[in-house]
Image 1 (tube, one colour):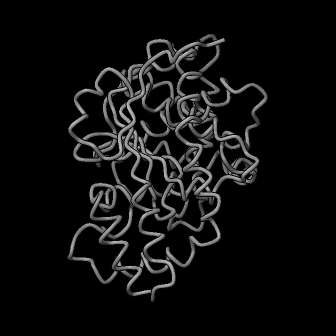
Image 2 (tube, one colour):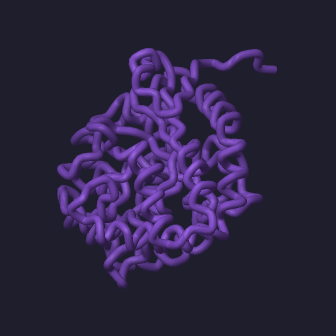
Length: 320
């Protein structure tokens, strides 16, 4: 029986003055209370007024979470794209209504659940000492969990609306949290890859490894569960050779469109299943994992890892 947390969780409600004090543990910002304040204030009001209140209450409280670099869409925090941003918010406020009950439940449970998941994760990786903050927010359905740059630093974000939309109520969220917590752990040994100069081979490895780890530390978890899709593996598997060839051609590419084609849930490539990079990365990690522990895999990097990824893809790229 565990009598205490294995490490400290600092829970902040947007209190930047406490950020330095949180250096010894996980710094957690809960940005969701202002959304519920907005939701209660906006009930029954015309659409235009609801959009105005969303800007005034939600975006104004946390403008750093509504930049285009965080949401992968038009920035809501600036004035230059205000008309487009208002359209995005208006559509979101209509679409989010069916998910509100589940979002309220997540908001109610998330503090205790996250602490529990973090403690369990620490048992697998005792040297876990994250240096990036965690934010709980409303993501306009852009993500359930994601690593983004916030205030010039890497941060781990969880969108309670994305969780409500993309995960069934009966589904355990531990896989999602383990996946994202591993990204924090992995960052302890690897460079920050949230900028636009990251070569494609790095997210292939990093997302594949987080997917693989989340399966290994959750006994009985299926491939579909760790890929967070019941159809992704079946859609991508027959395309393995062709995808391997494209990845080989673009291992050093820093083209964000190429990254989006492999990792975004919505891409501009009708020939590629969205998020196919997760499956390809997961397969690469499985191929290189034999004889290595999870902490050993986390330490792999540099030219030797890149060469091993290249060899694996070359094997898959050959016609049967």
